Amino acid sequence: MSQETTEVQVIENLNLDDRVRYLTVKALNKSSAISRKNVIKEAAKLLGISERTVYRHIEHYKIKCHFS
Image 1: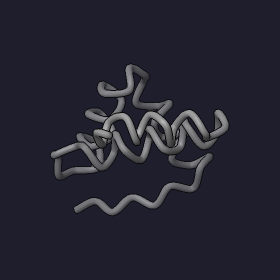
Image 2: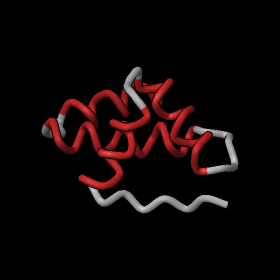
Image 3: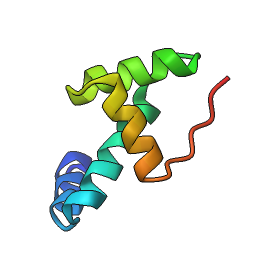
């Protein structure tokens, strides 16, 4: 089984809130940017949502972000 298949199986077992949180964290971690603004911008682009929505997800799901 590939890592991608395993990840899909994990996501399928999550409820909607947990899926949104998981994908937001993954997009934030995938960003190669250094500044907070650019990390948010890259995550928004990856997720196909606005930067404001990414900020809302961070606040709503209490996601801890460590930026330079």
